Image 1: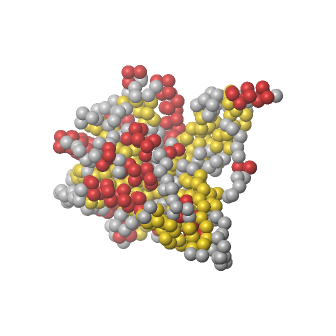
Image 2 (image 1 turned 45 degrees about the vertical axis):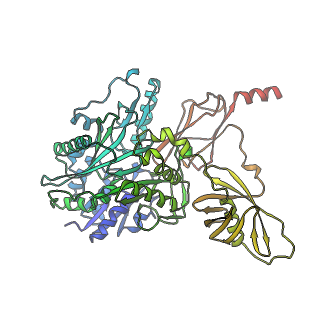
Image 3 (image 1 turned 135 degrees about the horizontal axis):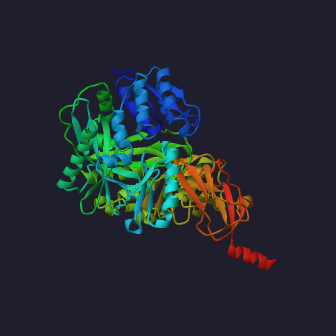
Length: 626
């Protein structure tokens, strides 16, 4: 019997495995990097071991350090979670060679399927060799790992080599393996996967299907089970192929076989993930099982029942990210003041109120999951839960998720992997509540109230706010009277520091208000920043200033780039790495680089000045003026 489990991972998945271990009476051990010293998974574990360093390469990807941590802490088993070393056969062997129980598939099965190139060979599918114009578009893909990292769509032959180089660098940073390959890119396909579970006694469970078509940067955003709208023939085909992959590799444990289903119903094999998936909760909800508990049982040598439980109802999961969808999904950092969802909704997270979201790891804050008898009910419940959730802190994709779940293509189950390419602009268009700034001002007025009122009317009070993430500025006016507070055209029914009720056109609007510090206000989840009465001249930047769109590390500067160098509009100049993704900073116009502050290895905060490009027209105007 397993008595103590070390989770070779961090964040949400570590907390999720610990939850099941606690329920089973199993002691838990966490490992952590220096930035994660006070992370939730460390606080929740019974024991914790430090992995010195900050980057994944120095910490969570160090198999030797993780195995030593397990031995030092007296653990007798290792659960890899997902990502990092979860699909590393050498790590699995190191665990078993140390006399520990490996809660995962045999190393031979990992080797057969963890590399997407070798998996395709096993399934009789060859990657593309020499790519021609006729092959476009194609997908550059990392052979190891997942989560959209090391993946690029290439539509022009001339961009293939740069994209290959970028994918190799990103894959090497995220997975410790820079191997990439090229395969055809199926436009408008649906991403469908099959959860499998196998024991050492020959029993294989094929646990329905999942649809994961809503993706950004090839990373899943919304997942559901079962996959809606599949014909019986397609379902039977993907089930058959999934079981074939399991039996062909002697697979044991939990895994997922992924497919891209084209418009004509053809199921193209993508890969097999030899680990627990991020989206496993939807399968758990539909089948009424705990996949982590079953992983532990299988690792202990127990046999599965001959048949899995019958599926029931429909489940939907949304991934809540600290990112700005309107700014190319730029990751966001800072303090998470509050994270709460309505009762009855499953929340899997690696953060609690007051935690700091840093730059070193994935931007996912949490997974929010609902289960209902029908798909329509589950989708409606998830959209409502997200809308009512309290998410106070960095900018997130919460509004995008709500709008996505209510989009007719999604509610009608007509979505595909191109959903966000078609609809992102509409889904991220600003739609602020015009009365939210007034509610913020009135709540602040009540919070700071002092003294008494005079018999003569007071002068109007003016407050200015900037909305986030759109950056729009709002000015509101209100006045104190003998009867309380009033604003033009709006009746103030109630005003308190945490709650404001306004009546507009005979309809009462209710606002929950939360204030952090002197300038940060959340009104029904909308973030507002109080602005000073006068603009600080020092905050102004020269035209053409390139500012860091997110906190991160400068990992590359264009070859030969120096002050005085000519640049062209759209030319990549600087590469930032944040939360395991690379982001290019390009020249805004054709002209001259007049300042360069970025240097490889430099860590920058959001808004930091990286470089300045003087456009040609500006240079000509300056010469004429002189």
